[in-house]
Amino acid sequence: MDNKRIIIALDGHSSCGKSTFAKAIAARLGYIFIDTGAMYRAVTLYALEHGAITSGIVDEARTEALLGEINIDFRFNAARGASDIYVNGDLVEGKIRTIEVSNCVSAVSSIGEVRRRLVALQQEMGRRKGVVMDGRDIGTVVFPDAELKIFMTAKAEVRAERRFKELTAKGDNVTFEEVYRNVVSRDKADTTRSISPLRKADDAIVLDNSHMSVEEQMAWFMERYNEAIKKL
Ligand code: DC
Image 1 (spheres, rainbow, N blue to C red):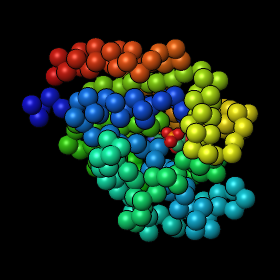
Image 2: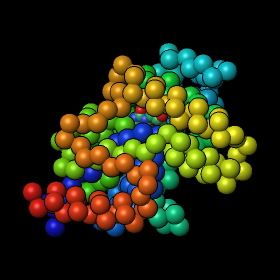
Image 3: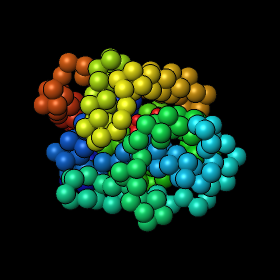
Image 4: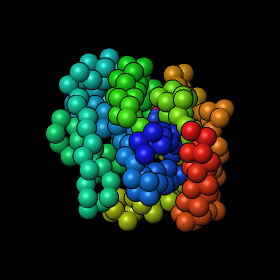
């Protein structure tokens, strides 16, 4: 059975439901889900809390200097059916999805040293296969040999609406326009940065879920998964 476990690389734009989808896939297959965006967010939060970001401006040298003291790990939370992210033993899951972190995370994730550290950690986490890893560069940089690569996207308005509902449900005081601007500016930053820009790997399959339910996405995925497993 072990030799039938693969790496599933799930890349795509911000707020298109990648994490929800990846979590559902992992639960269905008994795989480990790794949210690499949470790792970039955790570094951003740490930089915010340790004076490396002021008034939204990221000090690259200070952020790099902090990297040596940031220890990231995931611990499974049975109640959520997914892993929570910890920094130096502190649970930060609830603190990394604020608009403040979202506004700075693209700048932090464009720092070469940040990417080198996190990519190495991600490669180690996927070494034993049986993982669903969600991010921006998983199929292109982290696991270019992943057996199944999916590139997920949805229209910017649909993504902003989903993120807006999520944030307001949590009590975050944001406007739709603010969230929409963040989605559009992150798309631009993620696709145009010089190191590991977001792009579809040549062998990735596109999933546009603008008008698909979670069930429809799962049925679509299981067909591709079974094809990938047959090829082993
Ligand atoms: O998936 P997310 O929206 O939580 O990701 C947060 C940010 O982290 C996103 O704007 C881009 C960056 N990111 C990245 O550069 N590489 C990854 N593998 C994952 C996320």
